Length: 465
Image (tube, rainbow, N blue to C red):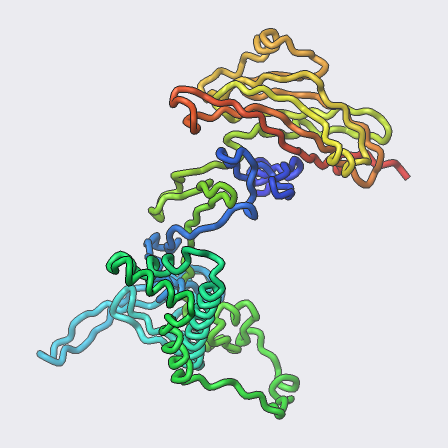
């Protein structure tokens, strides 16, 4: 599994995001409207849908909040966190109407890994496969609900006070009309009444809802917690002198999985409801366009919008491990792949700031401009010789050409054994259609410059001691 992950994760070559962070190309998005790279910190995350990853049931947001973001029909084992399955058994039950014995199916939750069952904690067998399992009552549930209701009222009061201050200060002329439109009353009023209400809003007298909030806070049955000077004495016999049985005591992970109860003994375990998974969309913070938007269907893995960087930005990889020696120029073979469906022009530039950060190495960049063929899945890759002749490549710089991939050789001189990182800029063109101000059939070119950082420290040959 580690070998498969190393193929797709290229952590040696990092691209600089627009915020300054360095990320692999697979973890970066490309906004085609801003023409900039975006990482997960440069985008806003929005929840599109919530679903259970076990039963693949779509759950609306309102129902998910009521169910505390948990599935009502799927459970996980409290011992090993594996998914619990339902075991069916048949029992004989006497019918009170006609005094006959009938067969009924009963269901028990069982873990196929550690063999934990719901009978271990005294849960009765259910006559329905799903939806009938009893829920554990939390001892402090009423206290927590009271605190939630109280702080909701306090938050509403603070919100009203902030709106009142903005209205009294009058820093925005159309703010009063904005509030009238917000609550949907300006459309049904005459202009004269609207002006009167606006004057009252600016004077701070039209905030009758604030009085109802104050009354609600006073009427709220909220009992503040009181600290005491004394505490319960430590039971030494229980924690220090009693023999510890690891088979019956719960671990910290098992207690945190049931944060409401935190059972200290295995006999207090109860089935844990499965947490819901979230499908989220990503939006650029600068231009407010979607960069990633999945399908609403829980069983679908497709995306409506997927503007990942590896669809438009050339991918740079280390072709073969270099054998770097101190103070000696060595060859570094890189591959550049064009993922786009058009011909791409690419060149390498120096960056003074990036070179200052990587001052322990000397790098010689190719000076010419390279032309990369478009990405074509149906193209025969056995055209290396013809591609060399077609582009008239220098054999000292270009190693090979295979379809939309090109091998380029750099000259690197390591000046330190402890650290060797190179940095350079990649300049290439980007072609996008259907932009504003141009025809649908037309295309527009834009030149983009990216900073690339490559860590070559593992390839330095150490001196023999």
